[in-house]
Length: 190
Ligand SMILES: CC(C)(COP(=O)(O)OP(=O)(O)OC[C@H]1O[C@@H](n2cnc3c(N)ncnc32)[C@H](O)[C@@H]1OP(=O)(O)O)[C@@H](O)C(=O)NCCC(=O)NCCS
Image (cartoon, rainbow, N blue to C red):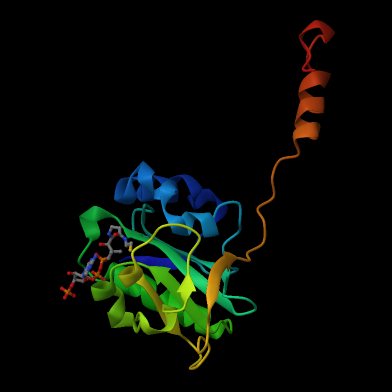
């Protein structure tokens, strides 16, 4: 049996390995990555699929964005399923659970860049993204949206921008001071 649950800190390595397998290093060049880098995902909306042996076989996360000025929304992605388990309904389970939780948490719209023939089954379409654009290159036909609250994206216009909380970064000054404290004076960093 495969369980869908919230991601925890210890899932980091397995999740990154799965994303490398599914997308390769080019994943960091995607325009959507510009909306994720340096930010935390939306609270409660990082999900993983875990197999009975404890291995991580699926991942999906959602991120806070603004769909044009002053219009809060979520950006979904990446969604990935272990290639050995694709086509068995797991992607669909991850999507439906992520959307259910997003709705329950009071979010009103979800955007994504992906294959319309896949995402249409969850209610995503191109209509609401006509007057929106992303901070980099993308294929217009793959820029999709789903209103969790009908009408949320009516009149949405402008650049989609990241609004998620910033990830905590290590304080460089503290790290250098700590390193210097353990280093003989002649070898200290300037
Ligand atoms: C896309 C992905 C998450 C789907 O997960 P999955 O568990 O294989 O999907 P499901 O089993 O829920 O659904 C299978 C159905 O989706 C269809 N499907 C899968 N990927 C598709 C795609 N890119 N375009 C259109 N249909 C797709 C299958 O043909 C199948 O159709 P059917 O139900 O008519 O037989 C998975 O294939 C994957 O991880 N791919 C690599 C990473 C990726 O492309 N992620 C999406 C980024 S946009």
